[in-house]
Amino acid sequence: MKFGIMTRNPEAWSSTQVRESLIKRGIQYECFTFPRLVARLAYKPYFKVGNTSILEDLDALIIRPIGRGSLEELVFRMDMLYKMERKGFYMVNPPTAIEHCVDKYDILALLEDVGVPVPRTLATESVNEALKYFEELGGDVVVKPIFGSRGQGATRINDVDVADTIFKAITFHHGVIYMQEFVEHGFSDIRAFVLGDQVIASMRRVATGWKTNYSRGARPAPEEISEENKELAVKASKAVGCKVAGVDILEGPNGPCIVDVNSQPGWKGLQQVAKVDIADKIVEYVLNDLKK
Ligand SMILES: Nc1ncnc2c1ncn2[C@@H]1O[C@H](COP(=O)(O)OP(=O)(O)O)[C@@H](O)[C@H]1O
Ligand SMILES: [Mg+2]
Image 1 (cartoon, rainbow, N blue to C red):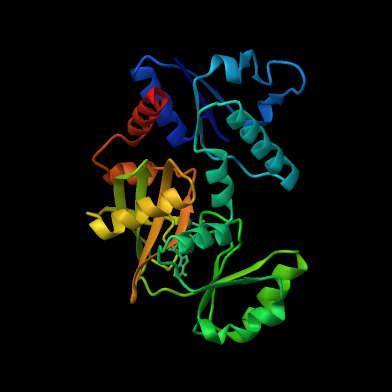
Image 2 (cartoon, rainbow, N blue to C red):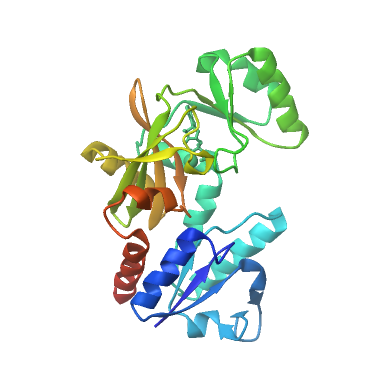
């Protein structure tokens, strides 16, 4: 048995936890970054990293952050994952899940399809159209980069002149305007960590502002997640095709809603309040999945 861990940074905390779990269990592994991958066509092995042939030597691949890159780099990375999947290779998460989760419009569109509550959201390439509907969303909106993460670039806007300037800046750089009604959540939200059809850990992320990302300094607090929220989180994870997911649940005046599903969630903050060893649970999940 040999695992692969594909990660942007092999020394990152969550990847290190996975490595330690594998060592404890006596499982061999190879840890590498995307740029080291070599893809071949019309001769084998199809994928190599160093002296390792991915499809022949590895039994499973755990994909940690796919990393930043140009459109060309990211599309190439996804194309390689799809090829590996077509060859019957096991990956967590599967490429479709990763692809859905890069795109905030796509995530929420899929969640809405299956009846998971999401905030009223509007996306368009047109500044004029976006401005027309600014008041409709309460004149208090969060504008987010459609491909963003860690709260970067997300802005709360409650002034139509500021909205006009921001929307023009977004479209000038050929971005898509993605705006969402502001959900009054009282500076905290729930992060549910889903593995298969279970929430294995959860926390309340307590912030000092409206962005509750752990990477922005929110404090992890223990949270007994309700059955309702558990079900929503699992349904959301499944809707985007994730086997492992970090689901962000906002509790607003109209009840819970989901704003984000992360297909490559870290768990450094969550582990501080979790009752289980999250990395080891992931490894155990993969081992069970491989037996199926
Ligand atoms: N519509 C919203 N209303 C209020 N707060 C929001 C809203 N959308 C996002 N946030 C806050 O901003 C954080 C980051 O937004 P999110 O959609 O999760 O994007 P990402 O984490 O990928 O940057 C959320 O965890 C939440 O605290
Ligand atoms: Mg988020």
